[in-house]
Image (cartoon, rainbow, N blue to C red):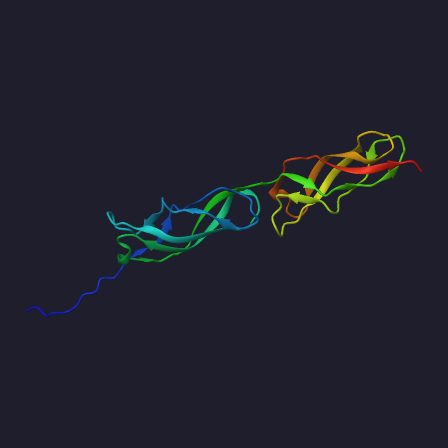
Length: 192
């Protein structure tokens, strides 16, 4: 004899989502990583079923430039035609990606001191107000090296000073490449 009743079928478990990758990117002072979920594989999925990744967020371990940097993937959730038949056990994963240097296109704001004529072209520079074209807010850069030369030894006002040999230092210097290592300013050479 049969008795009417109900039967419950437990959801199958997806123990891990693998195959999510992160895009290489240029430094932007954040830890954010852009993920590719198209190649995701689902440990525990029954052949013929359809699952995709609905959501996932990626973060590098730190903001700094590097190769094969660890990317932690969080908040993985599932979608797809058969999603109602599965339970995701682990909503995290890991991958790696590269962060390459951002460009500082130019350094501006360096000034030269007016000075007394001495027959030389050497110019002393003030680096304290240097501005870095391409610097991200919150990052810290300073000028490591710079050499100033007047265009001639002659006395004059508003004389061109060529600035060469510029290089970067500071807490975030390793995250930037300096594109233009030259600049210019003006200063006076006067007779005492």
